[in-house]
Length: 104
Image (cartoon, rainbow, N blue to C red; front, side):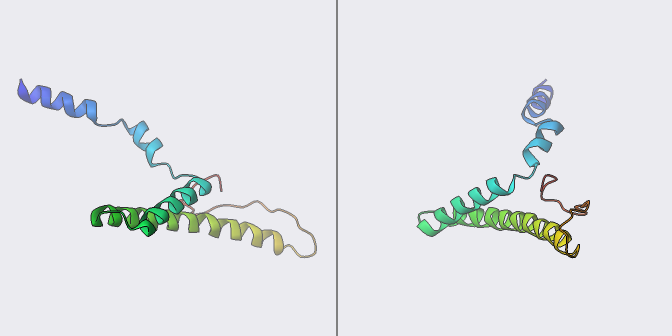
């Protein structure tokens, strides 16, 4: 009986796959940059315990890479426009391999 309650407690506390997917969805560039700036402010403040500082740093590195991915894709889009010659004609753009978000 104790095993059954333990299994029930685990199933209630484990998030469903749809909730995990929503939580794991990458933030927009603006939200990621805002969070990164907040982390930098906290780290520069020098008030964090070592463990907290390491966690903030790790999150900051991930956010920095995420933002860099958005910027790379934006640069590619600009390159497509510039390379059309005298006219600025937008060409269809495939964000092949871009994992930071589909909206960019």
